[in-house]
Length: 166
Length: 392
Image (cartoon, rainbow over the protein chains, first blue to last red):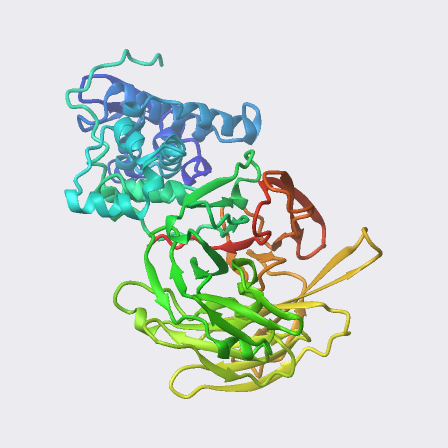
């Protein structure tokens, strides 16, 4: 549980997150405080229920991606104490990152930009799990990564661990 | 709040362009050395982002010298229906394995040529060949006939096959450091001989092994390297320190003064401390009960041994067939404060017959045992040993 949830609820304090594509997400302070970036920002500018602070987000965080991040933050702001405890929370986490690879990448970027460390851990683990047991070529194909090794380097790598390519 | 409808992004996500710190996060969450090697082989950015992380040792299963692959078992996969995997190892064809140290395997062929091979990078160094003198240190008389060794036995001559190499010349060896490109000359290799109070050492590039006396009265069973010195333990738990190199000398350190039924001792080095694992059995055949005791000493504090009932977050990996073992801390998927050990593989030597190789995990503090079985085929050698992946 992050510091944010230990603070008094903040009453009706709200903050509006605005994506580049024009969507607005109104969230409470406990949710916003799950993000290190937002927490820092809000501690400087403040926000209130009558006049909520509107925070514009960079174009890389689309409304779909932000939806995921907000879903995570809201659930974690509520903590493990509610809705079935830690086990339910873990299950929620697991299901949250069941994403296709493009979405996984976008959420990873968003979690890094918004500084939500535990969400970043989750997405990193999901990527690591996706790679598991894949050969090098399969990983390259799956993530659309083109090898930038020179022909010579590629040859050396293949000769060092040919099994990695099988 | 209802989730907004998905919107198309202009640029396709680019996994190759993921910032290094995010790539490093992903790499840090790969749990198996083989996946990690694959990650490093994807592209240069992924390679640069993958930092060194410790992987648990792998259990090398019996190696078929006519095959070109080393089967192994990953202890971290016990929970997830572990399968026997294998590493292609064409360099090891027609050779026997003399165990491993720091992730490098020691190979010997029937002619007695010894080499050092990293099974992950396939880097290889030649070591001096074995000689009559090395066998003589184990009170064995051998001679070379047309590129093959023969043992002069009381009843005549007996060929020294691959399977007899360990019991004739070198049973296992220990490296002072990991040979990496450029500084391999600094690496010292100490070999434990078949049955001798002497040890042999060499450096990479040496033409021959140099024998030296230990201060021990019984056959050396295990050697560890710790903070600049090698430490040897004999079959009775006596320990000596060996300075090896320009001037080689051994100094008697201490005896554990244990009851005599302890039947094996293995020594292992950590940063500034040594661990000694003593083993004994009681009970009657076939219901032997195995006991392990762990002793620890701080090499900076007068080498006084005391028994410990915890190794905290560390894990010790023991093999019945090799005395040089692995130790490390906080391996993913492995129990801490535990000893993983391989039991002897039971059963005959019938080819292609699947035998159950049992492995056990023991909690150091309460002695509770958990037995794990991994299917492996016993064909040629029956020896298994641990090797720590050294991926660079």
